[in-house]
Image 1 (cartoon, rainbow, N blue to C red):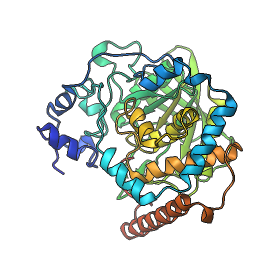
Image 2 (spheres, rainbow, N blue to C red):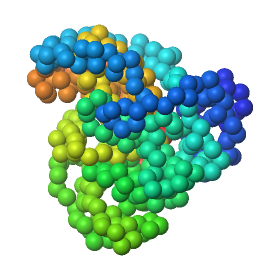
Image 3 (cartoon, rainbow, N blue to C red):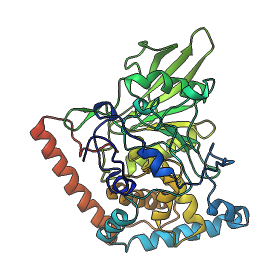
Amino acid sequence: IPSGYPGDLMILKLQLIQSKEPIKKREKASNTGKEATKKADKKKSVDDVSGPRIKTDKDKREKGGESKLSEAKQNENRKKWSTRVHGLNCRDMSKEFNAKIKRYIPEGVTMDIGHSEANQLKCRYADVLCIDQTRVPLKGRPKDDDFIHANWVGAPGGTKYICTQAPLKETTEEFWHMCYKEKASLILMLCDFKEGSDLEKCSHYFPEKPKEKKKAGDYTITMKEKLDEIEIEDTDFSMMEIKYKDSDSVKVKHCFMRYWVDNCAPVETEPILKLWRWVRKHHADRPVVVHCSAGVGRTSTFVGIELASHRIAANPDLHLLDVVKELRKMRYQSIQSHVQFLYLHCLVLDFFVQEKIAEPYKNSDSKFVEEYRKHTTKRTTRAKKQAAKQGAPETTGGKG
């Protein structure tokens, strides 16, 4: 992959997503971002549920009656969908994802603001662009200085998520400014500081010991205490206090999860579903900030559970490719790999089982789940062996 942006739009479509080099280590991009969105509809719209978001045809249909389905009918649809999933073929689904979604560019969106010369260095990856219509502007900042690589994402009536990239050293103040101004209740960190070949995936943007303080411009961040919330492998919880100059401070919980392998997906669903259920139960009233490295792979897979469940309730024949497309209208490049796409199916399926909507199953009774587990186990084992050779953390590389 060449280091800069190619000037030709068709080349961009073929190469977008493939690069793994942080923007800091690459040449500045040209005007390709503008070229990629030149034909897009410039009209902006605001969703009435999850912050600024493009209204879809599905949202409009819901106002016409889809959302009025009884709970029994919604659960019947979810059960039908679950039954169908067991017979799906992982290889065919992966091929379809790579053919139809991997390089999918949604219509009706622009990505010009983050691609401006002034904002390029605020982006961790040059090829992961930020949608203008759903971006989270930094409140209280002038328009020419209100950019952060973050977007509103969510399902109608669901949790309000802010999906963002892992803070760079240069954007740490902007990150805490966003959390402070948006009154975030929780920060979910779904990556480690370094992953694979010793590449930085996230800056050390928060204090890591109780009572420790960290300065970020005009903000002072203090870890008040470690928390015992729920027990999940390789996951730590803490309470942070954000103070701006001499103004009132705000508190936000921080969850640091190292369980999820980069650019891949876990074999088991329970750790992620356990965390997701906890988020829905305790953090539904205020925005939840979620990030991995690029803020599009692990992040969007986690956030996509709620949207998928909501859409399936109205349509038992729903293809999750449509959910990914909807996510990508809110957060560009959402769900980066075919493995994450397959994992989303597993997460939604097992959520329905846990809610006693779908029938319990054994892995051997589900063609889809058995194939997924075999595929992911091989992929994870291969990554561990490669990491051991390099003496690096266990990961598959990438930026998701």
